Amino acid sequence: MNERLTLKRCQELLRRREVSARDLTQHFLRRIERLEPSVHSFLEWDAADALAQAETADRALADGATHQKQPLLGIPVAIKDNIAVKGQPLRCASRILGDFRSPYDATVVERLRQAGAILLGRLNMDEFAMGSSTENSAFGPTRNPWDLDRTPGGSSGGSAAAVAAEEVPAALGSDTGGSIRQPAAFCGCVGLKPTYGRVSRYGLVAFASSLDQIGPLTATVEDAALLLGVIAGHDPRDATSLPDPALDPDLEGEPGLRGIRLGLPREYFGSGLAPEVEQAVHSAIRHLEGLGAEIREVSLPHTPYALATYYVIATAEASANLARFDGIRYGLRVDGQDPIELYKRTRGRGFGPEVKRRIILGTFVLSSGYYDAYYLRAQKVRTLIRNDFLDAFRRVDLLVTPVTPTPAFRLGEKVSDPLQMYLSDVFTLSCNLAGICGISVPCGFTESPRLPIGLQLLGPPLGEATLLRVAHAYQQTTNWHKERSPLALA
Ligand code: GLN
Image 1 (cartoon, rainbow, N blue to C red):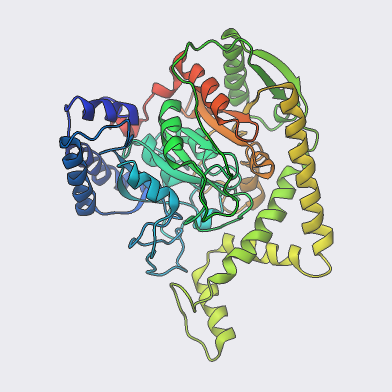
Image 2 (image 1 turned 90 degrees about the horizontal axis):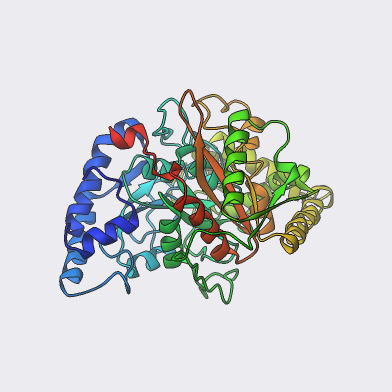
């Protein structure tokens, strides 16, 4: 099997009985075994368990089960290490969880199982999803399949790299400030951050609960739509899950975009944007215009405050969420003379430096005397940022922007400079603050070295159908997403 196996292609091959679920699973397991020493996308996988799931799928297929009812039947997918799978390790790429195993399945995992998917393994990430390069993993970094000296982005770097290395046709990641879209851009795949509340967070280890969403990383927009369709939907176990997130993208029609208004936010095209990224994004915009879309300039005036706002809110929520890792309830325990010493030793040993930095920052902005000045003010600015978007979406259907200011950077390049690292998310984190949806699709390459460049489309709350339709129209009429990484072809 030398062709690219997208989810759609896997469906087709299974339907025509050209392969079995076992063949597919073995194919991907072989690739994982061969490529992991170079790429390190996975934290763990269980070949025997995957093959047992494949056998069940093959029996169901033989009994006449179809992809209409179970769209992922017999198709392997992998998930980020912050999503709970019953009986499997759940570590968030941290030492603090020790050998903890999850006692239950996340809702998205239940839905994957109901759809017939084969769960292939757990993917590397920045510790607790804090980072933009997967270098904050306690278990070593993942490498970019386009250039092994570069990062795949983060925090869902393992998910993006696994898809780009074709170790798996699709993966789930999580996005709090860009962690699906940024690695998708760096690795030349498609990454979708759903509207806040579209996908249940039950069983996702919380980083910043008001910003976190689970979403797909895939090779094509069609596959992203398929996977989103499987995982989305109301869940009574997540109080922030939306009541009626019906999703029905029409991807069957012509790629014409007449009647679609696309906004270019002036604040996203300023200084700091690498020239090759700017050129690729501008030619993608001209392409969309050529398909009939109307292009308008818009303004999101509070954009300059987004980064600071995000790092106040995200760290505040993280400091509260991570208080539960205390050496008493889960995972690692380093004993001490008294409980306070036990906490200190466990947390001192268990968390990496970036997680500690964020807990300290978050505790500070929530502390009495500073709460009003930082946390409360950030919440007010967050409302202004959301209103900017809602105003813009009165004039346009979607916004078009770069995903990242630069292509994938080198491993080690930004580890000692947190601000530089944080800046790689300037274009993605406003979407989380506003609770809207966004997608990253490949739109070109830098010349030397040859690295993927991403285009970001942002849509209003529950605007995924339009987002997917426009992104799909772009892919129907371009070939960037068909390019395969050197590691995929190795
Ligand atoms: N890179 C951003 C951060 O470090 C976003 C991470 C994410 O989306 N999980 O917070």
